[in-house]
Structure formats: C-alpha cells, structure tokens
Image (cartoon, rainbow over all chains, first blue to last red; front, top):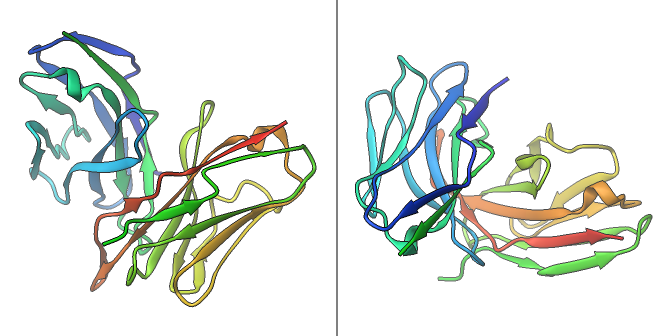
Length: 113
Length: 116
C-alpha cells in the first residue's frame, strides 16, 4: 500500500542554518504531496503542498519540489529561526476518491539561538 | 470563521469502559476524517466520511471502534471496552470538495485519550 518515509529526528540546528528534511514515498498513481507542521501545543496545520510532478510548494520560506523520478518531496529552508521549532510531517493523498492522508513518522526540529 | 473543534480535550478512562469523542467540522465541509496520533504508530488514518456515509473505514483498528456522522456535520468516534493500547491523541479533520478533488484538510486540536 501507499507509504511515506521521512528522516528520523530530532534535528537540531542553530539559527540561520540551512534545513533539509528528507521525505520519500511509495504510491500507485499520482498522489498529491504535503508537508504539515505541528508547533508546540498547537494543532496540525498545512505548511505547503504540490499536486503534480515538478510542482514546487512554498510557504513561510519553506520549499519542497515534487520529484516523481526519485519519489521524493524533501523540505528545505535556507535560514531557520527559533520559531520554526516544531514537528514536521510529510504526507500523501493517493489518487483514490477519499482524500485521506498517509503520513510519515514526523521529524522534530529544534532550532537553537 | 470557527475552525474544527473537538471535545473533550482530555479524557482519562479505565480499561474496559466505553468512550465517545466528538468532532465539529467547519461548516459546509462535506468531508470529515478521523486520525490517531500515538507514540508507537505515528499519525494513522482511521475513517473517512463524505456527508453522513463512511465509504472508507479501512483504518479502524478493531470492531471496538465505530463512528457516525449526523446531519452532515457532527461526528462521534466511539471506542468500546477501551484497552491501554487505545491511548493516543485522536484528531479530526474536515475539508471541502472541488469537483472530484479535495481541498486542504483543517485539523482540530485533538482529544488526548488515556486508558488506565
């Protein structure tokens, strides 16, 4: 079945460092891909998405490109801030007719000043 | 407008008791989803509603779990004879549809269930 694998955390970075969180997927058809973020004490919220190959999703300085050839959707940010400390989830929605999300395990990011 | 709300925010129960968790989706959202977030299993899909019907119940872990949705709005997830492995945060999400596609899912704050 469909699945998502993302790099294990925690990831600890200094402020202004470059961030990459790897995400790969297995799916039949052409899924949509998402990154969700869960800030401490808050609910899950959509960070960015891409719905077809070579699309780039971007928001709040974060970017991810849908790479069909490598089945990947890596999350990047050029300069992280302390306020980016959160748990990041990669997810896919398969091309079926329910829209349900399949999530990766989550990666905890801690940014130190 | 109001987001997705869930109640209770926390629930502590004894093993073997039944519990009901409630979700109020965003008004007008026809699609509603339940997920479970636990330490061992991560975030996993439980059930999907379109209107009042549940065409995908594939994630329900056992027949102790059931859910219903009434009036195309409020949904209740019921866990019978709770077990300690049911301890988790139960998340509800809703979304609207655009033709055959689904728009962004908006998540509620979750219900933290602890089974003693």
